[in-house]
Image 1 (cartoon, rainbow, N blue to C red):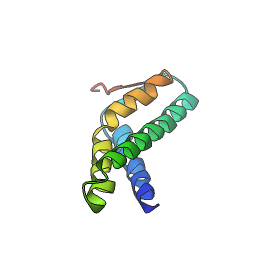
Image 2: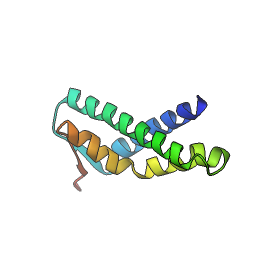
Image 3: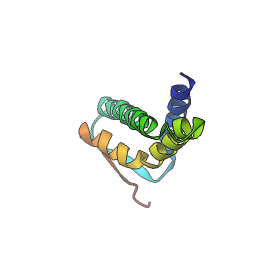
Image 4: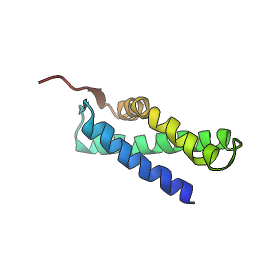
Length: 98
């Protein structure tokens, strides 16, 4: 059970850094659509993490069950964000230089 807690905590930290701190903008839709996109992103992240955990779980202990799936999901977060927000009609684009 703690494995899920760890990955959810990592999700919120990395997502806040990606969407708030990196040079990306969330364009289109209202606040409701953006929140639904964020919930979709969480669902996609956890589904991918669960699949990777099942596939990589045999690689020995904590490395295959927690660390590798979490690292791969964090690296896939930009693609997952574009997919999740795109489903509700919101775009994640590179921020323009001001």
